[in-house]
Image (tube, rainbow, N blue to C red):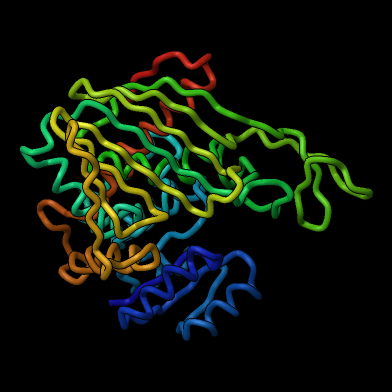
Length: 357
């Protein structure tokens, strides 16, 4: 098997690190900036470095990791599948449901092994969480409440591709962190979100750049820019079985490095978990208090990538997708994109309830 990585930034380094730890040899890296791509090649002892995407199509590459900004995913992934490659794509798969559905159906027709890196579901406690929600003790799903909060985009902050519509698209919190939460709730409950009502928070649309940093006010010699993507999202949710829920996303919450939380209520129990205490899972019943279970030997956040890759590569080694893949596939990427698109549509249309299509 020969593996290629497209991209040479932070997330591409994470992919390379996990592949190397699995004993997988990377044959090709493709980047935009020649110097950065060559450094990436040397760091991970890669056979070839190129700035030409077509090298991944032309060479005898088996599997390609797409670690590029979201607007580049659709055409790259489509070309790769048509060229007979298996693909692991960073989230979101696409920025529209129509494009994601096309890639999903194309992958099916070509019998390609395809996956989207929704790694949060691979926290070990989330597997136990899912088992509890599916048990008779839990009852019927009624309520879901959750958050995903970060502080990386609090100003001042680095100016990067995430603030450029040409690369990131019109969404930011929705697709960057919301897509992970959406995948997690689908994984835990087995239910689909069927409609949403969303509100966006865009707190500092006018910003100022100087020396690669963005500021709220204008330092001497700065350039004014406009950032219209979402800093935060509040969304009400309806699920296919009649359950309701709410979601809070923020990329500007001070003190939250990478905080994911989920509380799910059934007719008999409430189960809750959060990523800042990732080994603990809490179960509650009426008048019974809260029972906290701890798995001290569980893998933390860094190992979620490894668990995801190992599961996907079982099918990569076989050369065909399994009948019912346990990892997040392009079908999951399609369903996820449809929810993100509905959130965006609702938030830009006075929070009107919007069906997920």
